[in-house]
Picture (cartoon, rainbow, N blue to C red):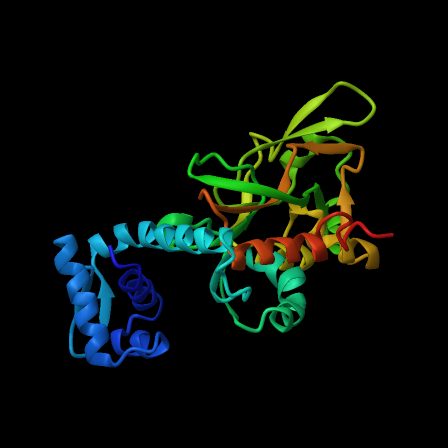
Length: 303
């Protein structure tokens, strides 16, 4: 199978334009179209749907795309093994992350990464909804839970401590809970489809649950930033990652609730990527960069 035709197909899948993809690879539009058609004939399927207005991946094209990328990745790794790589890190890197974390910690350090690797282009997909990496063509994702998918690999970036908090205004109006059972009479702000977490007393062997089974969520969010803003505004008590609210705790705009109880869930922040025999250079350098800038002693834990 012609790997240059595969490279063209992957580029077409990225920008959904055959002529533009061909130009990026040094091919005339007619040659690019012919080469892609030849690949489709060889495979016996239409990889893309063509119209006068746009190009879209076919179902077969979507299924074939991750395998095409893997073939190219293996070729690049093989050339590097015999000293025939160019030494340049290049390509489009698709990175998915929760929007709140990306805004606070990833976006501010991007200029330095782009300066180090001028031939890398970043495509950020920022959402608290977890995407299927392989189906969505994601190269690397940041997640706050250990991977369950056997097709993925992960590298730990940092710990992810969770605490309960509320605004001073809310606590003045409704009172400070003294015991987890008191949460039943309070307004809860919870994350949509979030799992219940264990609350463990620091001075005794007592385990409770957040949110309590008998409590009623007054606000349900699917966005971490909105949940924090609602908590700051006094809408109720919420559970947040320490990295998200450490500054608000420091300046007093949020207060910790039930400080004698720890949330027991062993949470951590992970960098997750599709399993492959060889990790592409663009993914490897971005992982190393994030570990360098965020890992070890994260800024939210610095004294």
